[in-house]
Image 1: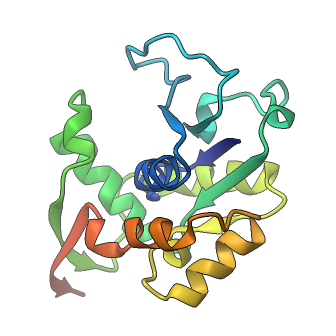
Image 2 (image 1 turned 90 degrees about the horizontal axis):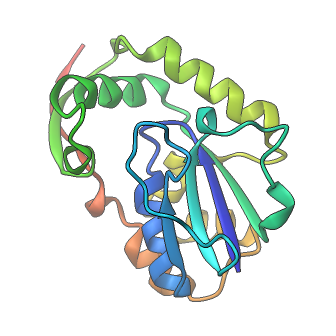
Length: 180
């Protein structure tokens, strides 16, 4: 099986790709089209999970038909996504391992500087998607809610293992006190 995850930044795509790879015994290709990444050669002919940011591909030339499943992943809460983006850009630019390390931010309703960028990325995903999957659904800890997402995608094989890998205890962002 070949699964593509087309996503905005800071939406849980790395954890989702890793969980799908583990649950379905698939190789995972992390952002092979990122022009800033030093990526190894990839064999796109084998079964795999591909994760790529929406702005790293050209929707007119990307081979969507080469994938059994395409997951278009975004977030309902773009404010939190923008805060996470800003934190990573300030603290881990050029350090990819820092982007997948847990961190703590204060809870706030103030959009980050990257809000417009995330909003545009969200628009790009929704422009090419027939169905959108939301971070808030797959990381909700609500087994029925998560199952429904994957049932709609026709990915229910090894769901119990997949669900255990998607619990929000594995999330990168942790919350400090509320700031209003």
